[in-house]
Image (spheres, each protein chain N blue to C red):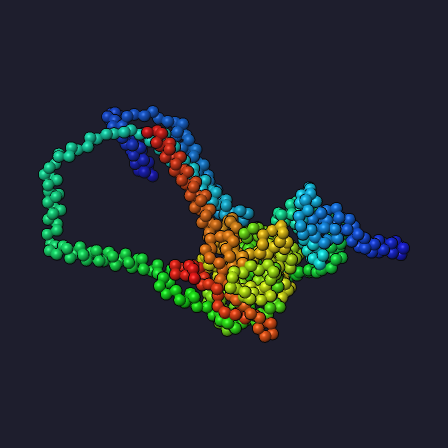
Length: 324
Length: 244
């Protein structure tokens, strides 16, 4: 115990003696001490510490109403205080001075420069077929670049657009709902919309789903050549938006038309709005072409069936199918 | 005692019997300028006849029944200040008695009655499926509401079970109407059960941010946190430049 005590005293004395007595020559100009700055830094560090402790407390309590927000606030404030402390420290307590050192003259070491040039020239000595090598590097670079670009082909068919035009809809294909029940003309009411699929074909195909609405036949203004496409005012359009291929899942249908907008099919992705009364004409939004219409006919027993194929290519507009 | 009881009973009968005539008075005062006398509607704009002297125009209410009257009056959708506005949820303009009287008056022209939904009969998982198919396009899958071109699809957080049941059958403003053939009463119960579930979501990550998932969260992170960081950098950099 006594030995420890003596050792401690010796250490302490040595530390005290090590204090520099003589004044060394300064490199940096002397700046006055800033007790206020030190105090501010200490206070900021204290606040940061308090917030960090607060984080631990909130984490430990675990049953607070908005715990997530409090945790974020505590940690965020803690970081902010530490950052502020560091900023104040840098501005008030770190001495700043500009030192200049003259840049060496360009021809100060001519021998060294010559040597570097020579090394660079000699380093190519082992290459005998430099043109072939350059060609090889260029070829590899081109191939690698192409390998990076080629997968963009998956973004859409550029050459073979035929599958996009093929749909399961032919004359006489009956319309069924999502559960496979045959849809009758009497089922289709006004002021609401229905999703229909082709009977006996997979529903997942992009050309399969239809959106069905019934309008007053006297309000229809279908384009020329579509006479008889909408028996009893029942209209069928592809449910796939012509802009980005989302499902046209919205049908705005005014309860009292004189004071609100007219009926329209709306795509929820980018609000492309189509006029079902006018052959799917675009009323609003980014879609560049009308919603493709499917001609309908009412068969035996009042069942609904297609009377032909779509008026236009279905799905989003790829390069090859912008217009038909 | 018997006499008193009979008096109370007869008063009750008289009370319900006089509801329709009282409704007729209220209707003439508050509704007829847009919906026409005897609920025949005002199809062409009639200048200076609506509330506050505005153009009066409105649909006929014959045949809409207690269903629509109850929905529009209880939610405060009607009366509407400007007939060209979208009706929005607000405090009802009439008290319970007034609403009962007006509903009785409109119901006297015929039409469907007030539905009786029972969400406890439904299942929320079936409700989620049906809601996604039929409603989420406009109202969002978390029933937070959204927009259609030309209207706002309202959030459903303040809707009661009865509000939802009525709205599905009416199709207010630009909303489609769904018949019992499309959505059965049983399925409607499931939808209501699901919508009621979305009122009290479990926001594990803190704020819900519209319950739209990573898109809104990313927007907040990039726009809010990003701009704060840039601002701080500009402030610090600006001060450093000044001191040089």
